[in-house]
Image (cartoon, rainbow, N blue to C red; front, side, top):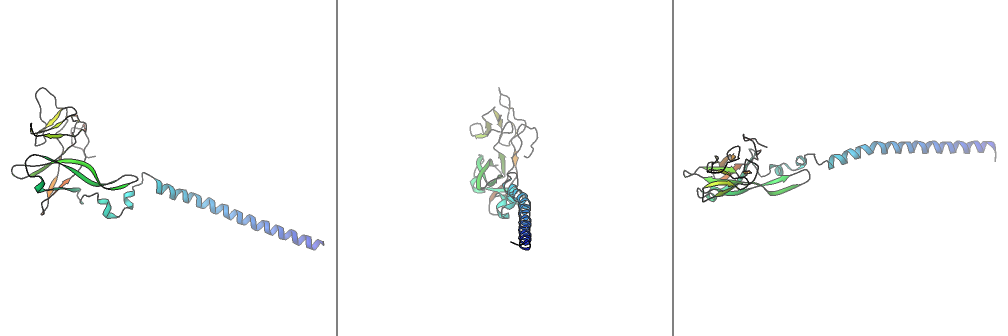
Length: 200
Ligand code: FES
C-alpha cells in the first residue's frame, strides 16, 4: 500500500475517534445535567412534609367546614331537650400522604337551654384529654380518668371528698343556626393541661 493511502486511513481513523469522543462527552454532560433535575423532581413529589392539600381541587380543601370554620353538626330538632346530646364532627382529613373524606375528627355535646338557646362543649377533658360523658343522674359532665366534673354550663363542679384536677372549665365552642334550622359548630381542638383555652 502507498504512503498516501496510509496517511488518509490514519486521518479518517483520527476523525472517527474525535467524533466519538465528542459524542461521548455530550452524552455524559447530558446525563450529569438531567440527573440532578430528576432527583429534585422525585424528592419534590415524594417529600412527605410537602403540603399536598395545595394539589387538591379547591372544593376538596374545605374539610367540610365553611369559610369561618363552622361544621354542620345537627338540626335544631335533634337537640330536642335540655339534656345534652353528643355529636360526632365529620370532616375530610389530609395528612402528608392521604386525603380521606368523611372521617370522624372529634365530638361535641350540644345542649339547649329552657329558653331555647343552644350551646356546645368539646368532649375532651381539659385536664389531660380523656373524654367526658354526660351523666343524667347528677346532671353533670364527668371525666372517668381523674374525676373531673363539670356543670351543665361547663364550669367546674367541686364534688365533696374529691379534688377536681381540671385547670379550666369545659371548652365552649361557638354555635350558629341558619334559617333552615341547621346547627353549625366552630370545631377547634385546645391544648389540655393549661389554665387558658389555647387553640392548637
Ligand atoms: S383527663 Fe379528665 S380528669 Fe384527668
